Length: 244
Image (cartoon, rainbow, N blue to C red):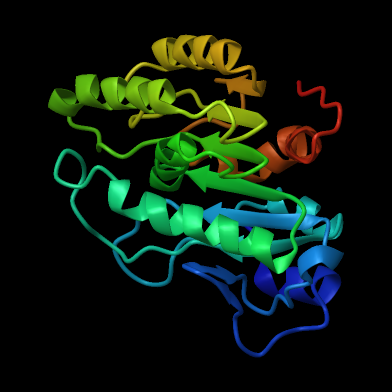
């Protein structure tokens, strides 16, 4: 994960004493929002958590900060039920309003990076036209690991792709990891993703169960940044990207 002290000292000076806001979004600690002067705004959507501060962003996002992107985040409270009791829809509108506010502040490009429940929230938000320029979905999950929820998890994943607006994003990355107990069927999800991006005309990057890293939190592992950090950052920026 990003080590804030090193990131702020090396990449994000001058520092702000208070987080800036754009609707429900706020800057990462210490970030001075540069609006139109920045390369863009990259928004972190964290996983589910039960106590303490919201989880930190994965290390590869520091690469975007080094390229002139401002780091923002969309924090949610800890805990809460899983679908069908809480289908994440209540968080979609504030996210979309936040990305629109970033545009209004002058950001030319907006990228979303979500992990686990944060990724599923970004997936659900693809129904909103003009949501972002690019989205990265790392191990999207929102239904827990119970066997009786697995079919619903896959159906909701497919339904979110079916509802996606063609002009919600231009580029989308899906990151799936081996030994992910929250993934109901990675083979099926990869196939649904391929079919959806072909129908919607999006540029796509699929990292499909690489040898390393593994596990539900694979995007947070140092190996992920070492192997995929540069190419994923290139893809999100709209550059030619050749991932392993």
